[in-house]
Length: 271
Ligand code: PEP
Ligand code: MN
Image 1 (tube, rainbow, N blue to C red):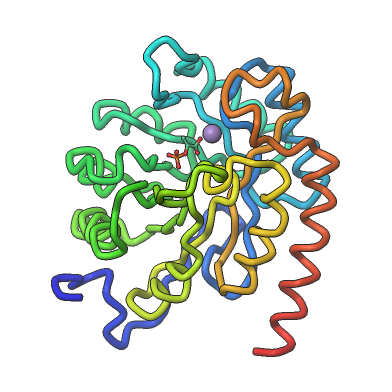
Image 2: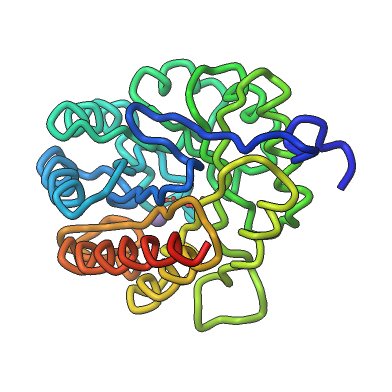
């Protein structure tokens, strides 16, 4: 793959992205969890406490939701970011939240520890350049129709603006399969490891769209060598304002975390 002047591995040592006290890419397994969207103060703070108690390392929650329909819930915006800030104050969990517009980057940085670039915005080059100028880590999701090469070139855009803290996220690609929401391309994990020095996590939630498939694909992500996962957790999925079919309950999440941590420890033993 040519032109990966900064993202390419080319003998470089692996990048470890530090977010607060959490290291992504140092051989540990980072678990990011939380609701698809921030809905209410009680919802986000209660969820943050529950995912923390279960062993999550960071809290996710969307304040800006890029929805397929303009009539669907679009997120609480600034109010949502302020609620994430409160959840962070209560739990100490760093915040991962999406930014959808280049004009919002500077002020979203006041609340976000990690700026998420969503699949639909992977090739929004003005947004990539703007987050590349920021001093926040960037979680760059793979576009649902994008090749690994196109995705890594998007990471190159961020790095080229001077921000070295990029975490890649495989979140499933569109295939002819309809049973799952997308197809989790797990081969992208070792492929990215041989092509770049950047850490990579997976998103088994958006990849499968089905609660029952999230734990097995999270375990498979550990086995594939991912540096972590990001998953959606809602205390009452039936009432979630977005992505309710794919949210784990806090007990389901807690059970999964135990298995993921065990498998990760076992994998260390065979490396
Ligand atoms: C999300 O993480 O809530 C999200 C919208 O993900 P994606 O951009 O991968 O669809
Ligand atoms: Mn979602």
